[in-house]
Image 1 (spheres, rainbow, N blue to C red):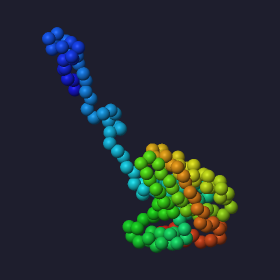
Image 2: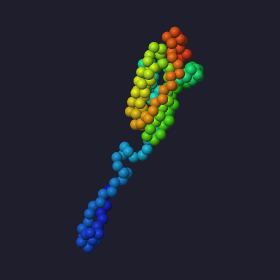
Image 3: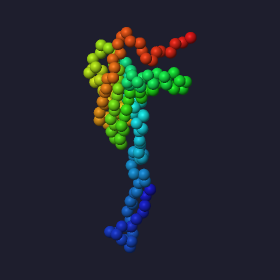
Image 4: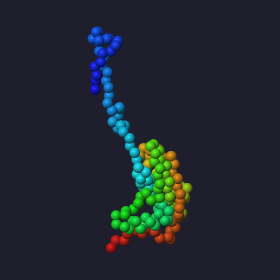
Length: 156
């Protein structure tokens, strides 16, 4: 939008006028407004990223996995990708706590490092939030001869 104004320098009697442009909306349309990201969104991203790491057998403590296995059997219950993940999301930063079960024989420190790297990369890329910390608690080790608490569904 352009307004025609007469400047004091030229004065109304001189007939000199200048153009002044005023912009509406204040800048790039993509930066107008605010985006908020729910804790659950970050938890899902982090949970999926952690499960992608080789050596991570499951997420969550034994108790939460037991309840999750029961919930998974209920029609419409579905598998919870946020099990074992807790996020605290601020305006520009987030902190994550993960509880994992590792496979026997893997280096726990290597798995934890890989989980941190994958979670940080995924969360920062998808949300734009800065991940300030990823705390990992290893709650169990899956032994080769142990049965899974969440057996695969059998087809009949």
